[in-house]
Image (cartoon, rainbow, N blue to C red; front, side):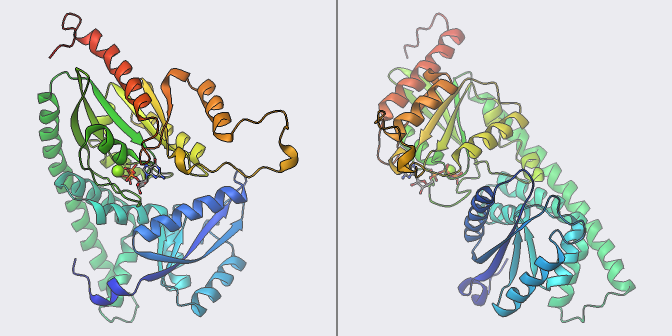
Length: 398
Ligand SMILES: Nc1nc2c(ncn2[C@@H]2O[C@H](COP(=O)(O)OP(=O)(O)OP(=O)(O)O)[C@@H](O)[C@H]2O)c(=O)[nH]1
Ligand SMILES: [Mg+2]
């Protein structure tokens, strides 16, 4: 799509909106909104302010309550806000109602993630997968798209019978597009499957983890390759596979798309073939950014997503990355036991090494190259185990 100069130089301004439901704390929701701001930034949208509201259940019609809506509306009018971004997913009718109420673009988390994926998709496979997910997301929301179109054409916003007919045409077009994309994806999947089976029976290790955890950085470090890594969410959408040899032991290492809280279900579904690399892996390396205040949530989110793609029970090395940037939670000095002078990182290590089998946990810094030998030893041990079962007479001398 052609971008005009205006949209690329003047950033869109957004307010972020999150509900604090019964099972969530204020701190948690603050962290979710920080993440949402990071997502918005990745999509080129500046977050100007956040609003939260305590509510047990979202309002069926407008998601937030009346009073809150008024407060936000006033702010939106006074501060040149273009977009409202909700941290949770909105139903098609909520989205329509909100759009009417605010007369601004309404995003939910899914739509934002879908837009980022669309911006970042490079390969034919990734593009097809994202387009499919996005079309499926848009289909029930077409009326809204139509009103957008109408406004762009300078219409008055009133929708007569002709409008409804056009919506029906648009719907048919999208349905056609969806089936074409599915067909195309089937073809690509077939090719990828052949490529994968041509790789033979080499042991396969897959890097998995929350987005921005450092997977690509670790891939580069271990395989001496150059995979795009940066401080952005979803820097990687395609799977890269490299052959790596430790000592005399060869194996395949793959880097793939990161996970995030509330990944749109349409995306998980259409990225299933990208995630085949994970599903068919012998060993997983689960990378966790330990410097992130919410890293325990991230760890759980990744495990839940792994369960969704039937990959939860594989041998897994948990790699806590970014120890160089780890900042312990501030503790009240009075709470510190004067007899125990252990450093907080040490304590954290102990906790996790007892929670997960200690043999499968490593603490590293990929950028500062701390503890990389230990990581390599750990991978070597795991790969060797599988290799010996697969090639009992070979003694892996190549
Ligand atoms: N401080 C610190 N930063 C790191 C470390 N490892 C990676 N990073 C930084 O974290 C950011 C994300 O790294 P990536 O390797 O792109 O992360 P990723 O998991 O591949 O992210 P996605 O592809 O977006 O899912 C980059 O800015 C890296 O430089 C580390 O050990 N310490
Ligand atoms: Mg990456």
